[in-house]
Amino acid sequence: MKLREENVSDLTVEQIFAARCEQSVRERACAESGALSWDVTITPDGDGATIRVDRVMPPRVPDFARKFVGDSIAITQTERWRGADEQGARRVDVRLTIKGQPATMVATGTVEARGAGSVEILEGEVKVAVPFLGRKIEPEIVRVIASALRVEQRVGLEWVYANS
Image (cartoon, helix red, strand yellow):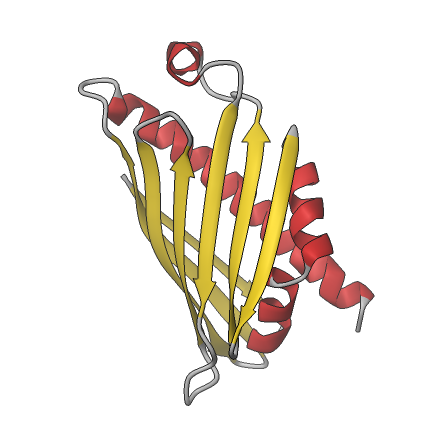
């Protein structure tokens, strides 16, 4: 199932990238998204960074899916941010896996200047490799991922405003 999230803000590309690479932002986003536990690792890589977020989430899914996911959902999210291109845009490759489940998300994102601010777009595909049931679960996983992305964006904006 397709996933597309777009966020327009008055922040610059570099402010957004700095927020995504800030340990306290990522940890606060985990807490505010309802994670039961988390571990965030941010590794600078030249002008980019690799970010890994491991979190355990409560199963906020419909009853028919709860039997599939169990009492909690252990998620690993890996982001590989590249340095800015000639126009100042940044690209990121995102992979999300649910431990012990045949569910994944593979996405690419861009953050680029728009007017005095920027636009951040993430597009990807969520797949649940379970015959018949997978198509019913995918929309629920997309909903949870989209919600978590909005929390990360909001927390990042708040951090930039508080530190400007």
